[in-house]
Image (tube, rainbow, N blue to C red; front, side, top):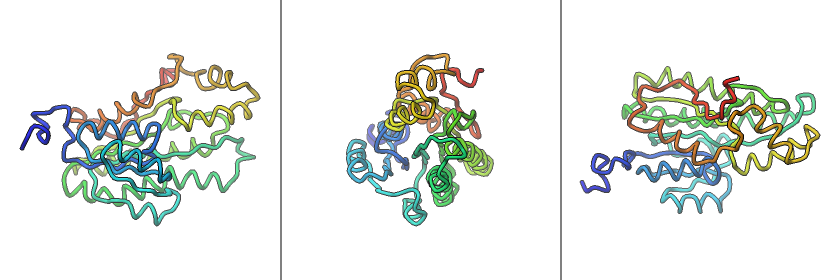
Amino acid sequence: MDSMQDPVARPDRYLTGRTALVTGAASGIGLACALALAAAGSHVHVVDISADEAGKAAAAVGGSAHVVDLSDARAVDSLPADVDIVVNNAGIQHIDAVHEFPPDRFALMQRIMVEAPFRILHRTLPGMYERGWGRVVNVSSVHGLRASLYKSAYVTAKHALEGLSKVVALEGAPHGVTSNCVNPAYVRTPLVERQIADQARAHGLSEGEVIGRVMLEHTAVKRLIEPEEVARAVLWLCGPDTSYITGTSLAIDGGWTAH
């Protein structure tokens, strides 16, 4: 085995021979995770709804592109099952008061952020159990730990994802599978950038005020998080030093939950 294939000779390539599946992997946190996992040696299945962007991301990481609408159960069930690492990252946002929130939109967000992760794990866990090794990282949010105004669907979905992650941690432990959440506050991603105008409308603020008074209101560190910072935490949870860390929620929130 040459040094490019030997994780002992190349400790930075400790995921050589592993296969990862990352949802929402064409941009933002998902793309940063795909790049980090690929750099550590993993073959990455890039899952995204955008064909053009998924193809570009897969080319960038030397992985495989899968164009899938995660709200479609049959499409989710067509994804590869034989993977060692699952990063459930895909998500969408809608901001409205509960009494004005479109019920169809609420249901759509649960399908993408709760049912799709369940279906993916339903398919991938048996292989992980058989091989005696697996890593599940669910990209939750500080909103999986705290609630905010006008985000009933998102907060509900992230709290549900936290529960699913903990159950998988308990069931997977005897099989060498860990399951954890990472919980960032506001990350500099297209999803967050699209929120700014919506938040401005909902709160009656300017877009500048949204960043300072809403997005950074609860954080001690007054800046947005970079996607690469989240990806490094995800990679760490998939690495050689974290086999005893499972069932936890890793807050990357600039001190938000310290209050």
